[in-house]
Image (cartoon, rainbow, N blue to C red):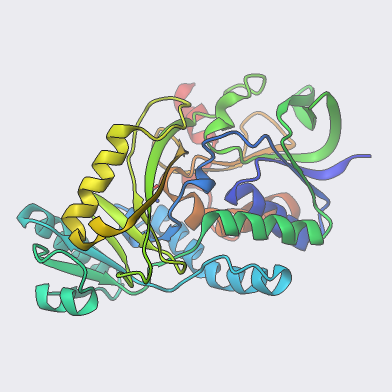
Length: 370
Ligand code: GLY
């Protein structure tokens, strides 16, 4: 028996797509080969579109819509599954550690305010009122009350469970090896020695999305390693997300503090390294010296799916029918998971996405190559 949609990849993006498709009444199957290095399992879960965008435009609009969808999604998933996905409206302090930082932070704040966002400026005394554990060297901070966080592994787990409760089939440990193709139409997948017919395939395989050579042109997605360090505190000394030019700190409800992140082009190598961990611990010492006494919990690394222009690929594959991409989200897969899921569901089931997708159309790379 066939299904309506096969989603290739069960990280946050694939999980949220399966959930939205199932909610809309589609028969979805999610397949995930559980490769080590999946970005969703090694991500701090910052929901920070203003901190990640370089200016106004389609990417910021997508990020703001992604952020807006997280709170209702978290509430819905908690109701359906009982899982608290760790959504917390913590706010983010973008701190300046030196004069160069301060110029950059103030400049970013200026364009944010010119674009209509409310962003406060805290002088050093107010930074220390807000976060007494931060270093006395901090020269000031921009305060983004609108930037929040979530726990990515819990979000993926809850979305998959909710999708399954609605009838989706979740097949973990299954590698999609290729596709069933007739002419220019994809009508199924080959996985684990089986063939599964379907109406539509969605590639949401993160850094591995470029691996399907039989669908030229291959998706131009490459792995960009991000290492994190997890420190365990008894009662967390931080209330906000802390973002600096040297790294970020994400305090979680259970006292864990995730410190991120490296950005390395080392292929499909998902191992944390001595140099990566040393660099992250150095930035902890500069930002919050008191965390030197926190217990070292573990180090982890994930492979972000990078694209040539840093923007995601969301939409149908050029030259093919029956297949779409939802990948290349680079540093923002968690933030963009809910909006990507809505857009793919719109595209596949309703024919018309709720936001313009030109900037994210996978065809933009095929056009350039032609
Ligand atoms: N979203 C932050 C990072 O990828 O490191």
